[in-house]
Length: 278
Image: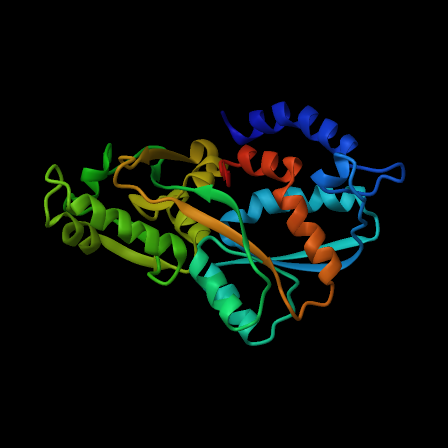
């Protein structure tokens, strides 16, 4: 199902859920509020730091929240999870931190920068190739073929770490051989700053293949073809979210986190190719 079609099918569900999660003044509530709990208002300026793979899903969430809360203004900063952590460590203004891996958020917790995180989504790496697939890549084994131009994210970027973990896992499978990882990594022609940069290289035909999250492949639509890794060799990416301790709008930040965890937020994430956290 393409993102456009799934969006059209999901729209009525979102409308119903939003109606259920609003009070008489059109102010958003959490799931708890929709079930009879106390309503909360989201207002003021809110700055959300989020992993690049969340660009489209969080963008839609922001539009939904702003439409139902006229006094709310959300600014998003999308980048690699580690880059966002560095910015928070250096004092960049942020209210919410959502990452594509636990480690950066765990570091932020240890340093007292964020509250206790909650996992809100799951994701899996996949191979993407240009729509015309000039290198004829049909399976993960083909990534080791001579002359293949492979693009990965940098090693310290979550999808870059996951990509190398999957490649290592495959090299332990006799079907691929213990030299598989060396052959594949020898084909890497570029290490990009985040997952969307990897996707862009493949979409533009500047690489024969890349490894991204399945949610990114879904957003790309017919610009790329997707090749899945064997389930037993793949990894599951966990996405944690937390409120930044020194943020300027803690109340709105907590409300945003609750919205992400709500039925509406989870439905939007699923629409964009993520798996629910539970």
